[in-house]
Image 1 (cartoon, rainbow, N blue to C red):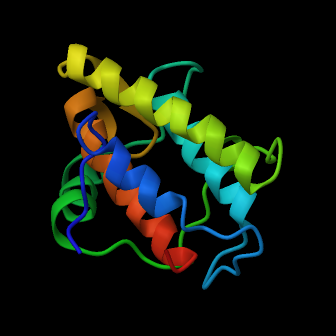
Image 2: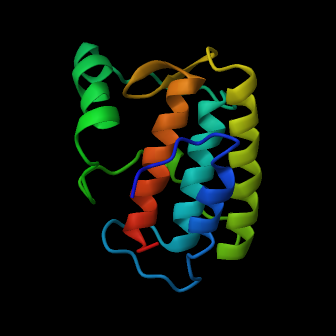
Image 3: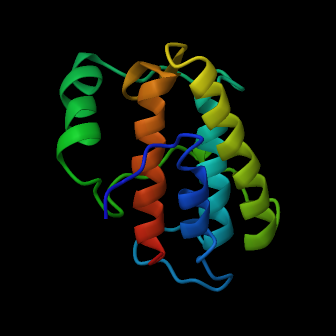
Length: 151
């Protein structure tokens, strides 16, 4: 399955995949439960639009080599990298609640990226990215977590 970019054209396809997530779905790796994973994805969208300042922890290696490998070459490791706590706030509801909020945020991000593809927002490890590049990051990120829960 190819990984769709998070764009307005692809939001329905991405949402349809996320809607296959069952409330009691068991993760295949990691520590997030299903509502927590959806909240984590929403938080990533929020941060990519600059809703909160993100500490830049990038360096020349992560901004160049790691960014290229992660976005274009290698599959993301399963359960090997734990996101910082500010990327995994507690879920604010069950799967249905979190999915509804995530759908809104996905659409908001996609519309903003369509209007402002060259807008720069910081990624904590990959440095400054355009919203067009964030579309790829989000597509890969969502795909990674869908695989985590078998959807």
